[in-house]
Length: 100
Length: 146
Image: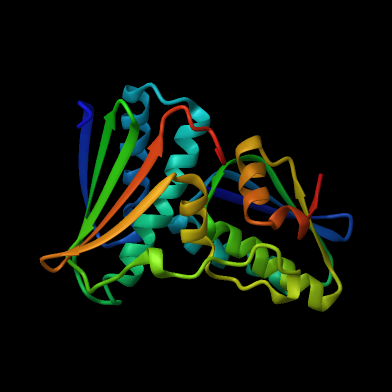
């Protein structure tokens, strides 16, 4: 799992590549601290290359979503594959995020 | 009794860093069993959540132990049996996360076993001779929630 984070148009874009399973999510927690710190801005989670996500990864997304909600930012989830879309629907996450 | 057509087993230490090995094991099993990619991914998710739960709760932090996984294919479908020697832990007794709550009321936890329940058709827990035995089944031809 690699996460590439860059600033774009005053916000942040994080591109996920690979499998966000439990051990990957534990590591990712450190990698995305900069996103949490910038939760007052628009944050795009680019999932074009995200192959898989388990509940640990979902928890990271949710924690970030909650933080932006408190601090006035926004989380956009971009290009999730069909399998991940199903997981988002099963867990009710589909209604919690802006999905494009 | 259904004839077992395929059977694989794997033993992991109670370390979540070994989850990629579980994923590899399941991919191989599913491929040999002729399971489609979509179902393979769902089964991977259901099993990752179930196994991580065992690693987290049956073995309190700092205790060493192992988790055995058996995968079987018979005419009725796929059966996974997860066995550990940890403290009694019944994941079926855990309450599901409420997935209908609005954002500020949603809890960060409780999603793992919920996903396992959503994906599998049957989950049974048994405590036998100091072992936790969790049996999970997925019927073939039942595509609900996959």
